[in-house]
Amino acid sequence: MAEFDFDAVVVGAGAVGLACAYALSQRGLSVAVFEQEKAIGQGVSSRNSEVIHGGLYYPTGSLKARLCVAGRRALYAFLDAHHVDYDRCGKLVVVTTEAELARLDAILEQALTNGVEGMARLSKAEAQALEPELQCEGALISPNSGVFDSHGYMLALQGEIEAAGGAVVLSTPFEGAQPLAGGGFRVRAGGEEPAELSCRRLVTAPGLSAQAVAARIEGFPAGEIPKGHYGKGMYFRLVGKAPFARLIYPPPIHGALGTHYRRDLGGQAVFGPDLTFVDELDYSVDPAAAPAFAAYISKFWPGLPDGALTPDYAGIRPKLHGPDEPQPDFRIDGADRHGLEGLVALFGIESPGLTSSLAIGEEVAARLGL
Ligand SMILES: Cc1cc2nc3c(=O)[nH]c(=O)nc-3n(C[C@H](O)[C@H](O)[C@H](O)COP(=O)(O)OP(=O)(O)OC[C@H]3O[C@@H](n4cnc5c(N)ncnc54)[C@H](O)[C@@H]3O)c2cc1C
Image (cartoon, rainbow, N blue to C red; front, side, top):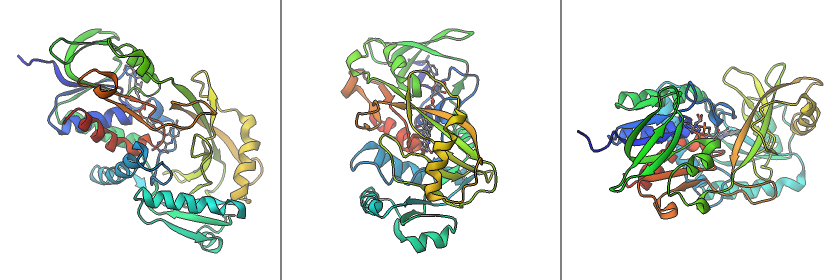
């Protein structure tokens, strides 16, 4: 009889938890993913921009910088291999006043430091030649940014995990874990058929519940659980023809990349997300925000028709900072931080978490010594 029921348990079947389980199952481990919802990918991974980020902005040496670039490269290869739809449409970072031109230089320098391929500075005329409806004073082009079918991606990950003998167990909330004397964990799962099982390694990737899940692991030091914040972002959809082929991004705002334009895989134009710190998981989209969105968008698209924006959806970022605090890096915490051998706990996996997911999986495997 095996010493443990599973080599590894992963909590959460969002893009990141599935990518972690995929990385572990590719190394020959038996893996179970516990997901509290009835289907995979119903959390943060279902309410985002589905943008494959280049990795331009993130500070030198950060996990975000390294894992976004590595994750993007791995993601395109994975999508190709699994026939998942994407559009490597490219992105323009645009400024609409001459005073902001220096911001483009700073972003370009950071992108080059981060190893982002194909970046170039464009004059106003060059940018407008690519996108005739664009108003700007200058731009950067990131040719390897794109949009993709994130649910197709998660289904492909699930397929790989199951093909390797792993299990994605739905309607199964993680309720707690207890370190075992000789190593490994006893894990309690709830739901209709509560169960207990043992595993050698435990990975927690529960998105917005990261703090609550860590608090249910016996021996996890309370002082090592970072305070969580909710950063809500709303989207509006354009009624009418999509005006640009490429992603259009003004420079980032504090705490987010800010409201941008994308043409989704269905060919429709979507604008968002803004950023508001909220106390509740409230996914409503306030139609009264449309004029503020329109004012912002018309700076780079003066042709936006009146009344053309319709409320679409909202997502909530699992943030580790409040409105006036600096934005920290991803937290991928191993035993050196929390003291529990065999456990990796993820916190604050906001953007670019989707793009980075495969690289986060590799990083988690490395932290587990695999
Ligand atoms: C508005 C917005 C826009 C974004 N845009 C982009 C983008 O364009 N590109 C990009 O790269 N990133 C983007 N991101 C970030 C990206 O969406 C996230 O980093 C990523 O989806 C996080 O995935 P996850 O698996 O960590 O979390 P989730 O997808 O939330 O998955 C966590 C899972 O854990 C489950 N869970 C929680 N608690 C338990 C429990 N106790 N037991 C069992 N299961 C549990 C949840 O049900 C959920 O399914 C955006 C995020 C937001 C909010």
